[in-house]
Length: 357
Ligand code: SAH
Image (cartoon, rainbow, N blue to C red; front, side, top):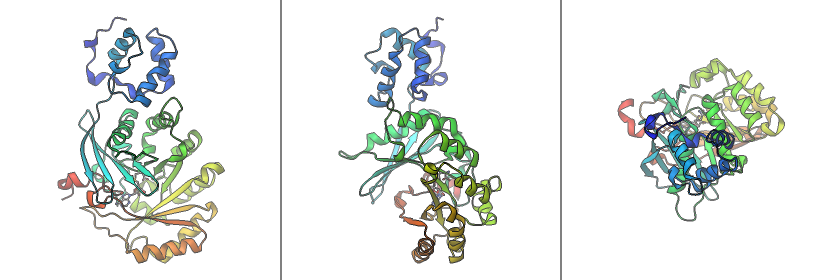
């Protein structure tokens, strides 16, 4: 086939960073080149992290030309960096079609965690989350998701290195499963970024069947956003509960293979007067007893347009005490990056104030 470079517009070219090694093996074969070229290409993409096909210097010109006719390297750009007094940095990543997503670098004493977005917007409609107010704009491609990791790496201070990766940014990662899975394959593969899956956590609002697939497909950590101990309240806070109610969610977690089950954390956003009473804590102990689960209590981070309030610290500590008494592991997540609207659930709020007014 004789395709001239001008015959495809940039928009119609596929992002080369959507490719795992086996995808590239097929591309190289179609181009009539030898199999080992696929590995050279993944090295350029995921280890050297070059930004144009022309930089792949050890490829023959003919293969580079073939790649340029069919592919591009995605053009995500950091359009804004907000720096919090606590060291947290929020990157606004501008995608080629104009969508803006956010990714957050969170340094703590021992770790540097990257909080990654999986969708532009979100369709899950959780009451306490700013991203929900956008609705779903679109799924991110694998290239869009990886672009956040590459962009964040370029923003690090000298001596700083990303150690942990959490899919807790914008979007519901399991509602974008095929692209998430390919991203995780590239992140963890030896031919890719060679990150240990134990350093990666995928957080979900509880899409039960997809969670079970993830547990079978990838040994990453799973976090489940729980937030309520009765169906009536969870239906309101996280409406996906109407499709996958609490009993089904907990039962599914119980039946995951033991190694997967051991690595589940339940996230619980503390909302004053809504889900933070001692009775809620006691119900949570009962609900999670069969799982010997870990619970992560999160201060609600307010945003414009929401009437909900954060539980006072004393209430959060009292809640934690009940869980500890009930033999659950329970930690309190301190909010990071609040001053730059980079905290959990605040992404999108800041630069879109008008949408909330
Ligand atoms: N959709 C996925 C991942 C994105 S949300 C999920 O639901 O898990 C990541 C975490 O931030 C979730 O635990 C979510 O409940 C929490 N979160 C959302 N909005 C928040 C807010 N305003 N304050 C505190 N935590 C919030």
